[in-house]
Length: 480
Image 1 (tube, rainbow, N blue to C red):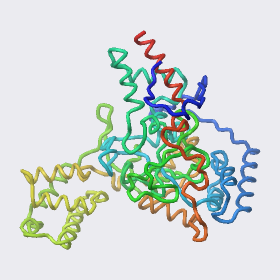
Image 2: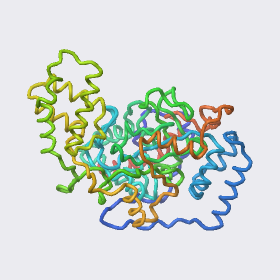
Image 3: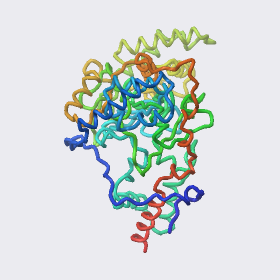
Image 4: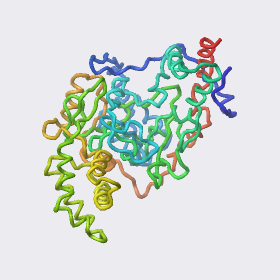
């Protein structure tokens, strides 16, 4: 039998995954069709039990001092998803004040914080719609790639991996690469792809987000993650209580007990932008058209040519001839450049000080043709594209209409926010009384060391044996 796991551990050898006969299939999002209602069994009796549990926890525990055992009983998906948001926050305030977050790439991805995570750059993604339509589940990568369904569904996904292979040996290599190639900054790729990736104590929108100023993300109490799931960290530096010094090493990998299972959005708090002006059809900040089945942003070509002409005019000529630039010169140019853009109706949200410096350096030291070089930089730094401006609707209005259309997709806890995501979360939690106490010591794993796993642990490699068997079946059917 093919073993796509190139290495095994004692934990793996002694762990019996089992092969369930049937699992719920992934729900594809179709923007042209009404998403089927997902009927949830939330009886009044169950709610009463939930609220009694929550009330007892809130009454019995001092703020931030609840034991791991009592937190594990209350910070569950069933309880958190059934509480109203006010009670949810009262419960959270009695536990640990820390949070973990996941940001989607919803909309046109217009920024990326590092070269290792530039997937989907400049492309439109409806990832938030898909999560909501998929039973409001935040799934791991394999869960969104067809590996969370029945055996037949999983085999179809495996068949796609080997579709172009002309021999069994080539097919085996493709499977090995897909499931077991090492991923940057973590252990084996299988463990990486079966985990939901969260960031600790920040919202990592700069690294992984979609549209600047229009980020859709969710947060979870760290007690919920630590007590209910297996988890590991991307570096030895970070923990639930201590973010890494570099945001790119600030991941926590969360492992569920079956392949493709994710985190319920109902168990967390979903943050949606409030005041951002967006397209009433797509929810994006950008004007766009669908061309040959692909949604593309509308370029602001003529206006950008006017801006380039202005940069080449006498207005900015002094910057080209100054023998040396001081910090004050960079600041003065940034103000003038942003003013020039704003006067011509160009959105300046993404025009950071770094972007202004790049534009100024291009103006002073062009590679070849200064106008062409500047225009290229406008495209690279997203200045080229039209935003909806006053023609749009508020993001809050967009999402409220969306949930009116698809009421079963509305998460249990929704917050509309303005400003920078991490600061919005900190302000929200502080206002709700979820904050650190100086007299309370916090352990790195919050008292749930038993759930800390390595990427080679069985809990981080769930149903690997099942996939081994299904891969072998596909290869036998294809190559004999």
